[in-house]
Each structure stands twice: as C-alpha cells, then as structure tokens.
Amino acid sequence: MRVVILGSGRGSNAEAILLAQRAGRLGRAQVGRIFSDQADAGILALGARFGVPADYIDPAPFKTKLEGPGEERFIAAVAACAPDLVVLAGFMRVLKAGFLNAFAGKIINLHPSLLPAFPGLDAIGQALSAGVKETGCTVHYVTPEVDAGRIIDQARVSVEPGETFESLTAKVHAAEHRLLPTVIARLSAGG
Ligand code: GAR
Image (cartoon, rainbow, N blue to C red; front, side, top):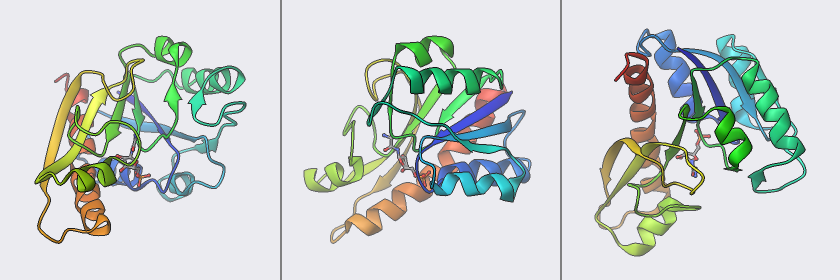
C-alpha cells in the first residue's frame, strides 16, 4: 500500500508513522513521499532522516484552503506517486473538490479531539475550555465538510483536575502517535 503524507507542521505524527515502518509495525504500508505546504515545516526534515523524498509545494494563492493553481500542483505531485492512501498528518488546509475527487476514498485525516466534538481549529483548547472529562483524537476519512467524514478509529485521554493546555496537548499527541500508525497498518491489511 503506497502512502503519501501531507503535513504543515513539526511532523511528530509523520515521524511516528516512519518509526513504525522502520520497526516493521506498519503492515503492508510503505511511505513513499512527504509533501508540505510550508517551506520551513519540520516535517520536511524527516525526509533525509528516513530516506523518503520530502518536498515543499507552493499552495498559493489561498491562505487556508487548497484550491486553484496550488491545488493543481498538489494533485499533480501526489498523483505521480499513485498512492493507495493519502494521510493528512497536521495538514492545516481545507481540501476542496478537485483534490478530494482526484483521490476519492483514499484520504484520511488525524484530528485532535473525539469527533464530532470540537471540530475545526484549536480542538485541544476547545476541549479544555468546555471542561470535558475526556478528550482524545480521531482518524477519519476526508469529505468536503470539514472534520465530518466517516470515523475509522479514536483514542481517548482523560482530562484531570488542574490539566493545562500543555499537559493535555502532550497527552493527546502521545495518543495520536499510537493511533495513526495502528490505523494505517490495519488499513493496509484491508481492515
Ligand atoms: C496534530 O495534533 C493533529 O491532530 C493536528 O495537528 C497536529 C500536527 O502535529 N491536526 C489538526 O488539527 C487538523 N485539523 P504534528 O505536525 O506534530 O504531527
């Protein structure tokens, strides 16, 4: 199963996927390529470390969505990899019909809450402000409606009294690093 990872940030989830692959815990999945919409994203540095080509693609002209010429550049680059699975690991841009249709049913996203609770930005801050006793992370298929596609799996973390944004973020990230590689391995086995 050929996997392409898209990310915008530090890339800790992409790193977790690549470490799982190195340890033989990614099933039949093989990460072939990493792309980012941010030229200085930490995720791009993983390429050299793990021997996977990692490239910036200019997402212009929009700031928060992928549409128009930037979308066409991403479609062309990702299609050239003929992926079976496109993993959004901290890709902070809304995908539109062009990209979604080009890879229909093959795009999964990681979100730092127990969807459908707290979609959108700052999901961890939203959960903390809401005073919930439990939050977590979700892997789901990507559809035009943001953070609303079919849920594949979730992991839960408790919110303790005195929890801070930093401590809760660390717990959610640790859960994400376990969940996402496990889901990819399972999908590669057809499950
Ligand atoms: C992760 O916490 C992921 O759930 C979140 O971005 C972070 C990326 O971290 N994604 C979203 O909020 C998507 N709406 P990373 O770059 O260290 O993997």
